[in-house]
Image: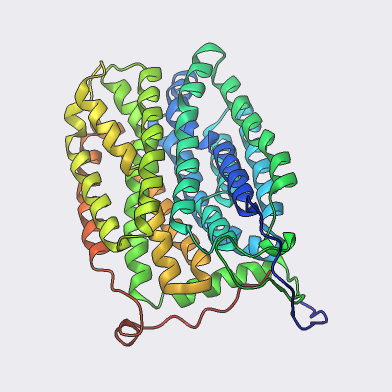
Length: 448
């Protein structure tokens, strides 16, 4: 990496006040991009039954492709965050949307489980991983100095809700035009968003000569910095992991978030529809119930973001995980061929709690790790998807071996109790806490 000439930063008068800060435009475009990228992550739960019927593949074989997707979705996130720091948010996001579209389109050609792994698992896992929740954290920290909890809550809701509101569309398309037609719809959704991102998304406030939303200091023009390579971005991500892994807080967040992934994307997101189908419920009806989860997820996650700006995030995490565990204990007795009021209550509770854990987790990463918070959250989110991937394949095995998912639901409830306990014991960080916990190396400003 060669250094470029560095000029002294220059201070200019603050930009003329705007009635509408461009940070909100960026947040809106980011929200649309997250919704557009969410289509495929809604597909496996709906398309598993048609694929099993057409090819005769087992639930475990289909779950393996989903598990690889979930793992890559998480593991690529910290590297994507570093790439966004090196090459800009806009470029990485557009490339990710094209990879998602290509993977969804190519999936119509699969004839073996290995090909399904390549398209569903690898290609779409890489693309959606670059559009993971770390993207929401990066947008929030780059463009907002205040209202961070609220913005991260809205963006998180967009990601999860986009995944769930696609369910009825994909389910109906799979029945009317086949699962291949549904895959083309997913590809089109991702590709349609790419031009919007390229036109309206900006990498940083300085591109428009403004400060972050809520900042009152005069605008400081940044000095030119070396650009670096993709390898430099990878080293930045790995170095951040090495520093964060020295703290107990990182491991507490990672364990809790791994359980969060196991009980959302890994189990409910992947196996709720097949489980409901086992009880005689039509696929479209089960997909509609998950779509309702998405509706209530909007309210739950936005409210969680609002609470995160006002309440100790440790308390919020413990409460969310405990509520989720209790609801999972009742799920096996609630599933039936028809929609009963009791399953609707479960759907509402799970919807409010679906990704409400994200805003307080992002807040704790910011509190403890400072400027490196988005990158650290990328690694915490990787743990989320590792948990999701493991749960997805194990639940498939449980279904193949026992003929039902009951044991998987009960095990998930127990894990939620562990997550609640771990979250409640996360220590506060500040001048007093610094001496009681190994410190992370001082956060350095991330490269552009």
